[in-house]
Image 1: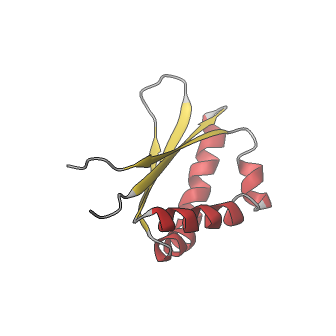
Image 2: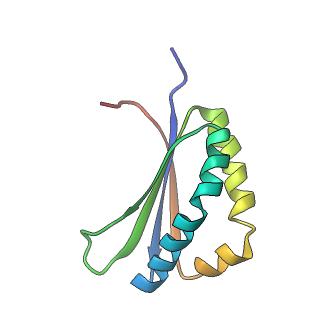
Length: 109
């Protein structure tokens, strides 16, 4: 039986729509570079989703799907180095609260 795909999702809550829009803009502008790098490490799919059904909540959910555990680990290290140590990115996310969950795909349809 093949190893299951790994996924993770990160929820980012912002204080207002301005902060959230700045974050979305930064992700969209930089995605061509880092998505290419992540795919070379086994990323299968990335999506950025804006939550709209929670009233005055300013939230995005990012989902990542990886080929396998090794791909997940390689990309986790890449994300830590690329965004965790980037001062420009750190300024954008000062007011955000991030929550990340890691998952195994048990069923797809």
